[in-house]
Length: 229
Image (cartoon, rainbow, N blue to C red; front, side, top):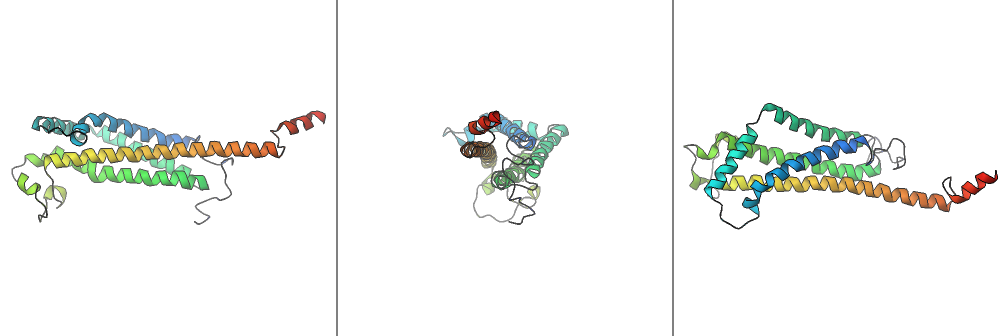
């Protein structure tokens, strides 16, 4: 990898090292936990769709559709807050990856990849599904449930730019599955950040052991020498 992207001389003990205790890390962990909280609030709605074998009633689908409409049609301030939180996470990654060390490239680079996957899932599946629910795609006169459940049909729907719309239950299941995938991806980000903290801790322990063995400034041998002088 080019030296302009990675500072190979930077270690976890360097002054300009941006590790797990830096403010940029909190800029990553904060939005990640914020989005996990939102997904946890959605879990009671997603659970009957994915994790039970009980038949799904039409009344439950109506209730879920009403809830999703309320979420999508919330005031613009809510969408702006979500966008700001996404941007704060990206800013934290960019700060940690500027003149990154090898540790940053390993843990923060992998975390950024997962974060990008999460944003992609959100935009491609969840936002699109919310738009369909808010537009009442399944209650229109020209929507054919039989055609929506068929395989290999041609054509598309103008509401989605020519893409094919699934049935209501299948579309809501796709959104629930997307929420689960997004939650796993975000948990992966937290695991990588925790892994960086653990790696730094072990690295500091090894450094202190070598320092004591070599009679470094923090070793008992060096302290006795200083007292004699």
